[in-house]
Length: 62
Image (cartoon, rainbow, N blue to C red; front, side, top):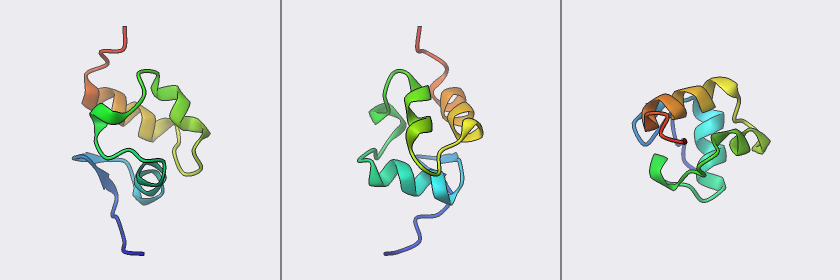
């Protein structure tokens, strides 16, 4: 498997989080669930990554 790097769809979240999201079938920020806290269940995705993804999405989960 190739190194997928620390960036997911332009957001620097780290290699473990990027790999976890790709393995879960996500390819863009728009693909992610409305409630990003659901991603915390994925091994490698932590609060910092979720926060960066929320900021990238513009926190439009109202």
